[in-house]
Length: 298
Image (cartoon, rainbow, N blue to C red; front, side, top):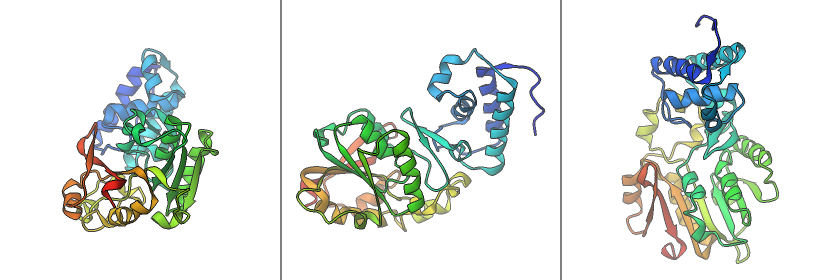
C-alpha cells in the first residue's frame, strides 16, 4: 500500500500519480479506456463527481485529501484484482453517456455506438420507425439509439436475465421506459412472431463473436466478464449464423441489420462469402462493423 497522501494535489497531479501506478502494474486496457492515463482520468473524475470530459476543465483545481485516498484505494483494487475499472466503480461511459455497470453483463463498449451517435444509421431509421438491439447486454446501445432518435421505438433482448436487470436499470436511469422495451430469450425466440406490423427498420447487434483460440488468449480483465457474452464458438460465427439465418423474417422491406464482428473479419468472409456487405467505418477501421440490407438477405 502507498503511504497516505500528505498534501493536496491538483486534479492533474492526482491523475498523473494514479496513471504511474497503473502503468507500473502492466494492466490491460480496453474496457472504456485505451491506456493508463485515460483510465486514471476516469478513476479520478469519479472521486470528484464529474464526468471524465468535464474533469478535463478542472485539472488545476485542488483535490481534497480524502478524494486522493479514495482514488489510491480504487487504483490498488484495480491492480490487485485485475478487474475492469467499470466493475470497481459500478459505472462506465460510452460516447459521453453514463451507464450502470456490474459483473452481470460485459462492460459497455461497442464500435456501433460511434455510428449511432454520428448519425450514420439515420438512413435506416425513419420517423416513428422501429429498431431492435439484439444481444443488448447492459442495454447501452439501445439507450444510445433511443437518446439519438427520440421518435423511434426500440426493442432490446438478451438471453441473460442478470444482464437484462442491468439493462433495465440503465433504461430507467435515462428515463426511457416508454421508448425502450426489453425482452428475455435466446436471440429471435425472445420476440413475438414476426408479422407486417412488428418488423424492424434497423437491427443492431454486438453478439458474442470471439473465436475459441482468442478466448483462450484473452487477458485477465476479460475473464471477469460473463463468457456467455464473449464466446462465439470455434470460428466466432456460431451466433452470427443464427442471427443472419432469421434476420430476413424480422426486417422491413427496406430494413438492414448492423453487426459488430471485431477482429473476426476473415472468419466472417469464410462463413458468408455470398452475402453483399457494406463495411462501416469506425475509429478502429473498416473491418469491425458490417451492414447488410434486407434485400440482400432474401
